Image 1 (cartoon, rainbow, N blue to C red):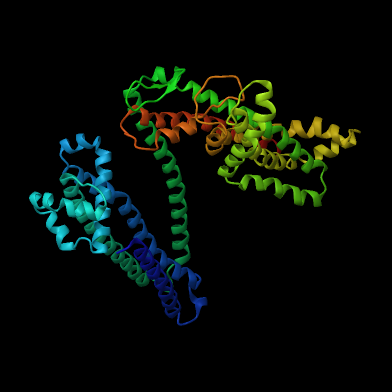
Image 2: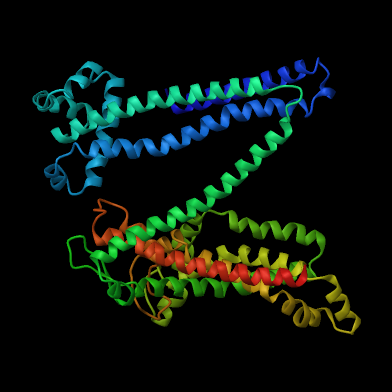
Length: 486
């Protein structure tokens, strides 16, 4: 049964449970809802929760475990010789999944019959005899080992899908029956529903935390695998970045880290003054009518996709900087440069700095302004000597959050700064960042067991630590500010 249909059936049973539970509660009170412990909707919600939630939780766990269990069983069927011939176990399993999906498509299209696919899995001689037909049906060459594993994978997957559908529907029906039978006049349905909602909220927060932990541990695991193949000293202190999947790669972090910091600093030099001055003007000088128009227009910049900023850097800003600055000054002839990416990224960061700083300045107590005016200070003196020092911790936090956003940017760098890893002080020279190289190392025909591919996880972990540190520092500063003025 398709997953969507199963989901719809469970929701339909939940809706039915809501209606039946509500009706049974009112009937148990003799038709007078005032005699019930809780409102009638609570009784219906209790039945619906018992119907839907356990079934969907089992469905979610099943969807996570099913591919892992099937892959573990199918992998044991593949000979080591076939794995060595293709390159790695992960690549073999990718081929197995592709062929298994292709067999489903071929059967659905009539290119192979269900009886033929069952026959192929019974005898290796028959498998070899039918390889040509299957290859034509799937649009590519298929080895006997991969085909046999794909047939087994397909059979296990179909069996697991059938068991999953039956178990989830039966569990939903049992939940409906149990909730319906519990519904009585004296049943404390509101307490039960509130406990269930509290449990769901706790589960949601726990899943968010576990997701973060899972991401970190997955990066740590692959990073350890990388350092088993490549020396960590050469990675952290190397000055060359020359990956080669044929061996002899130089995978030094410093050129990428330098490009990341250089572009981010230029972006902050553009965004911080403009964003901060705009925030001061809108918070202290602009009228309500102008602020109502200007603030949304500035915040529109935050909603523009980064690929659009990248195209703007490639087509407009890059040639402009090259023709009017780089070439006349003899600093370069390329439109892809650190300055191009930094300027466009700074434009993208203006609303981050402006909106956060505006909110922080408006949060400064009015009593501080009134006291300054009472002492005879002008408005500009009040802004400079009272408001900005009071809002400084929050403004610094906004700048750090913008810096972490700049460090993680990719598309603007790809189109505006190029992909060359270099150590240079020339802002009109092409450079690249950590995020760009993460994408580059994980795309294309890649052997994911080689250091050239695993280095992407080491780069990701390094970037994660940097941005995490900036975010923690920003949150610490903002929290300290809030404790002082709230």
